[in-house]
Image 1 (cartoon, one colour):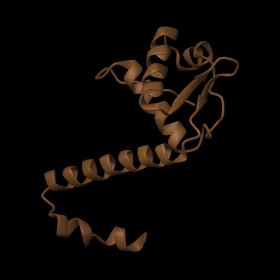
Image 2 (image 1 turned 60 degrees about the horizontal axis):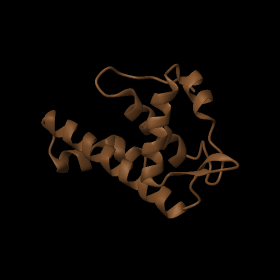
Image 3 (image 1 turned 45 degrees about the vertical axis):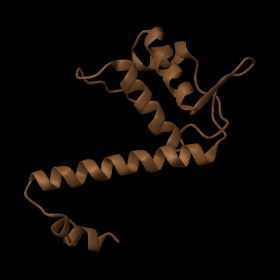
Image 4 (image 1 turned 120 degrees about the vertical axis):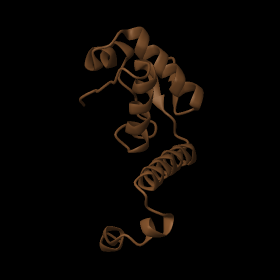
Length: 120
C-alpha cells in the first residue's frame, strides 16, 4: 500500500486513520495479525516510534489487541468494527452534505440529484 501523509496533522494520527480504514474495509481481517511495528515503519517510511503511537491509539479504541506470542491482532469484535465503519461513513456523508451546502445546494437539492437516482 502507498502511504500518503499531509503536513496539516501529525503523521501518527494519519497512520492510525489509514490503519483503521484498512481494518474496517477488511484488508486486515478480524483476528488476523498485523505487521510488526518495524515492518510498518519501513513500509510507510516513518520512525518506528510514530507507528508505535498509532498502534497505541488503535489499541485504546479497541480495534487491535496485543498478544504476547503473536504480536498485535485485529479485534474479533465484529460489532465494534461495524460501529467504527458506520461512524466513519456518517462523518463522510456529513462532510459531503456540508460541502454541497457550501456550493449553494439545499438538502432537498442534494436528495434529488440525478446521479443518486442513477446509482441506486
